[in-house]
Length: 478
Image (cartoon, rainbow, N blue to C red; front, side, top):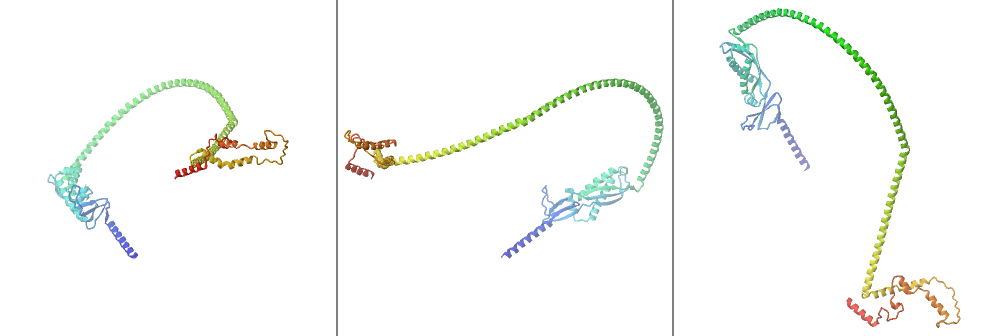
């Protein structure tokens, strides 16, 4: 199965490669000395006219297979020799006009299309013969419209007329006239030769006349030149004498000005020297003063660097150390305060929890006592009596009495013996239970303080009433 896919991929790759190579071979580039003509199904032009071919010069085009084909037009110039004989001029004189024309295929878009339509596929010789026939006809036409004198004397006009007529006809088949060169013009009657002899004789006579006139003008010019020379020499001599006198006066004035200027210059020089000396002394004093100031500033800077700067550094160091110590203390104090705050907050939270739990317990205790706070207190006191008794016992626990000797004299006071009074005083040293409760912030009930029953605020409930109350409470709870 894998081999089958590999074969398919290879075939597809080969097919794509063949298509690419074929496309590249169909892409045609046009060299600079040729015109690429693409023909076939070209389409329509800008004016919606049907085109028979597309001409490309200096570019490239893709040639679609089957739809298009292509060919090249050679731009190599053609040199055509035209030996025109017995051409009838305007004066009915037959002349010979040997000439050479250089033509080639034009690269203008419209003319290229004409060449593609009329010259494509023709060899160079056939194109040359076709151009030769057109040139012969147009050259005879131009000679017939001009006189011999115009053709012979005004060659530029003749060549312009030939170029205009010939090029207009050559464009119709796609050619362009590059150059026209007329070698010589002859006629069978000798008219042009006679014109040449006449022109030569006239030129010779004109030359002789010109030579004589030039000789005459030369003699006259020579005499006038001698006269002008003498006048100019005399004038130059007079001007020279006058110039010498003026020069002497100028020299004298110049000497006077020079001496005056020398004296003035000497005076200014002496004054300038004195002023310069004074300025030099002033500048020297100023320089010495400046040097002293600089030296003082240097000494001051040295003292500042040696004394003030170290002191300032020490001062800044002390300030920095103090700031660092203060910052450290502040951080330590802040840490301690935060720790104390956290500790106090924890303790307060603990106390709050304890008091909350105690309040909840007391609330439940009051509810258990039938919402009677006094009964709840009695229950708490009953619960704490063992601890209170233990506390009283602890108060006299460490009192050691090795021996008690009581001398009984037999005297009685208030009906009591001495031994009874001693025991009563000893027991009186034990803290009363009421004082112990008061020190704890509590109050004993009146019946525990030894008050009469009628003064007690606590009611004594009989066993039968207690049972009735318990029964009633249990009924309420149910």
